Length: 368
Image (cartoon, rainbow, N blue to C red; front, side, top):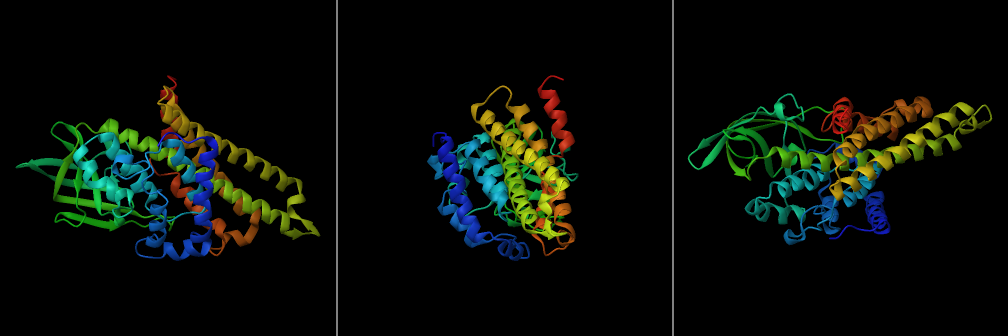
């Protein structure tokens, strides 16, 4: 797929939004987040039929061959609807990791079923501390005959509970490498982690001599490419969710009356809403700019991605906090949707590294 025009990306975003408006309502989100899997397999199948699950997968393997700008557009719609799914974990992070590793055998084996939504692949790229840095990897790989055995712990694995296949970053004799692991194999122990945001699934995976197959060669550059695309996708999710949160908060301010007038007519509320509009519009711009620079392979792509990572996280966090304040007491209850968005904002802000780490990377990319 060639890069879509702005109008075509808008149409793609709208198409996904229409599906999710019907299938990922607040009631759907609340129901789904209480299930064992944490996602709706029926909706996942519909996303696959639309080509969303294979968005970044090459056309030769049944995907759409789309780029960062299309991914960002879809994730704006997903964020607005608080979609509960392995979309970010499997269709973005793992799919891009396989593409970047360039192992044709692994791609032919895994990508077609990933594109069709039949197989969920998740990437375990962190150590026990859950840090998204090269030095944080604690899983080791030991050669056993013509295969490998993995030992160690990977924590905060996104949608690890849903995985049919795990891609594990581990230390081999020649450096970091990615290994394919069956999560049901002997030597693999998986435990779900408690999450502040009940719409997300995170796992801690322990490997004790787990059999593994190596994929590709030196891995860190491929891992960084996958994380960068995931950061763009996450920024899109955060921007879309912040916009939705602002929309229903402004609507509430227009219709909630106190002292004989709409609370939105009070100057303090107007100022808060105006500040949130600026935050939200800036987040959308940052996410789309990062997607464009990454798609172009621009020299400043790393800086643009890092900027979007902390700008969108901060905007989403502030928007949800102020939304709770503007709603008043009702938003402090679990029954109100503002609570769902606030929890997603807090959780998203820690995925793939927190804002201070992205600020530091941004400054380094600028040569500061």
